[in-house]
Amino acid sequence: MLNISGIHEGFVLDHIQAGMSMKIYHDLHLDQFDCTVAIIMNAKSNKMGKKDIIKVECPIDALDLDILGYIDHNITVNVIQGDKIVDKKVLTLPRQIKNVISCKNPRCITSIEQELDQIFILTDEENEVYRCKYCEEKYNGK
Image (cartoon, rainbow, N blue to C red; front, side):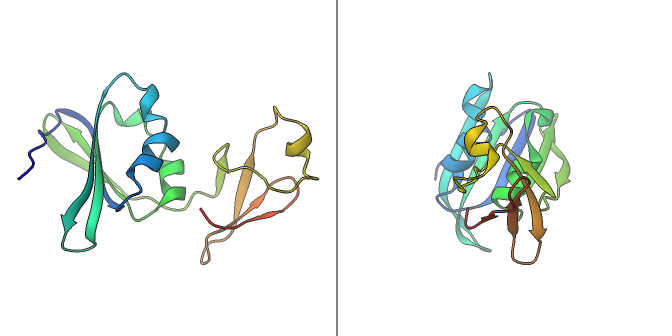
C-alpha cells in the first residue's frame, strides 16, 4: 500500500472527483506556493469509488475557498494544526467569482479592456449558472 506521510500544519482537500486534482492544483496556483504539496490520484473511496486528494503543508489562509467552491463545492477541506484535524470547511458556490473564467462574448467590454477583471455572478444556484457582470453572458460548463 502507498504511504504518504501526514502533514503537521496545513490543509487536506479530500473527496475530489477522480482526475480533477491537477486542474485544482493549477486553478489554486499551488505551484506558486513555497510549500510541500502531495497529490494522490485515483485513491479508493467507499463513497465515490475513486477520488483524488491534495495535501498541502501551508497555512489555510493561502487557500482561495471561493475558487475551490466554484470548481466543486462537494470537496472536503480539512484544516490541520499540530498533526490533527482542527476544522472542516464547508464549501458553497460563491456568489461572485473573479478572474477564474473568461467571458466568451466578443462584444463584452472585457474582450476590449484586457486589464478589466473577469467577474461572474451566480444567477441560478440550483443549476450552477454564472453570468458575466458586464454583459450578462451565461457561462456554460466548468
